[in-house]
Image 1: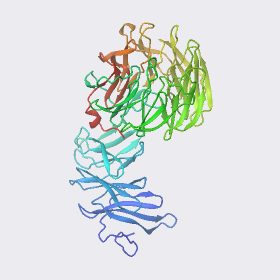
Image 2 (image 1 turned 90 degrees about the vertical axis):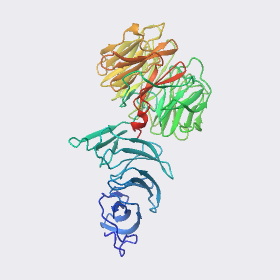
Image 3 (image 1 turned 135 degrees about the vertical axis):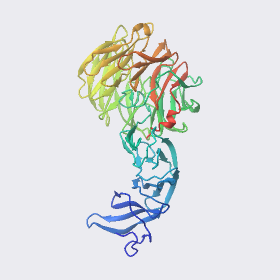
Image 4 (image 1 turned 180 degrees about the vertical axis):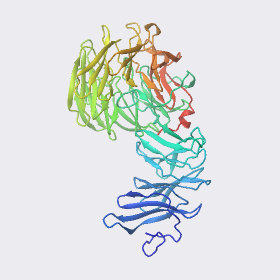
Length: 563
């Protein structure tokens, strides 16, 4: 097919130029680009008969400028780059149905490689490189009539960037020419902490960098942040449980962006953690609330039929489903993420307090009664059907962590030591158990080790523990006189460090960064400490009504790792 043959192609061009891009195929259509000069070129969509191998006279061509970029097609839109070496460039968004240019996002250099589209969020995010010495990677969100810059990452070397990027499981890969002798391959992580203990499995582990000293980026004003709760971090924002208000802070400065009032669950609750997902933030109290994460406006809410409050348990989200609880209403509920409609519910024996953990289409949570132990349940995500349950001598008041088909969960003993249990996700059989101070702490997992905090000030010894994940053998624990650990504190792992808190009865008066291998203190700060979160090279924690942020706040702009 000659692209200047008007007898065969009604949308031919007299001077189409050269095709130096690869082609993209989508549902019987061929897409490509061409370059006629340093400033001129076209985007093409041509129908193709898979049976005969012939092109058809259907499609369009549109002048976009010089392009060697292979188009990416998603959601009725075509994304491609334009611009030659040494010339300014742009990312172009085209209407797939008629070839009209919807928007252009200009950048400082030619976009010669194909862009890639990430669909992990509610709006498409387009990632591409600029072809020049000391080039950059861009992430643009398609918000409808225009593209908005989410971040730009300039790698530390000055090498030329010519290739594009690849995205896999929340990570972005690209290469540069490096120092002309050795090229460099970069991997950028998905640097958010979007829900309780990082993900639906509650592993408490992120690939983010972590600060190596106690330099504060900012300390928020006293917003009444709930001690015992954690924060979630996404969209350059920090979402905070403030007892009777949900407060959204700017990640870079700690400035309050918006707040949403709700009915408090009472003084005896140590607090839920807000959950971010697909542009929305979810939390539980007298109801389950779904808010627009950008402005805090309510999208929907769900009141449990029992009319009971959720106590301490946070929502967990996976596969378009939100799993929540109603504490002494004795239920866990599965709600539709987009409407709040109830899909199923499960009745348990005792108080439903866990934040459910989700993996392999299974949901794990606990129930307990004061002094009477409790049960651990595993149910199907799709319909709530019970797969197994396990009776426990002590109370599984906290939440499970799931990793590699193993359930790790701690128990609280009101009269002595509690347990850390490792269970088979398949059938609930006990793989190993270890005695620890009583705790509601959710374990964290890193490098085949399990980390957990325990102890209640004034009642039991405070420790942070590290166990071998396979055998349950104790690797190290902090000394009791150090007071590092707490029954409400869930540790966070990042960059070879474990972040934990020190309690001041019902509040916190210190955060500690421990070496994950030895347990030695790397740095500490005499405030904060409640269940830390790590994102974009920063650590966030709560204490005395405030949120403390450690690290370089500029990293959330320069790292550019929200895909």
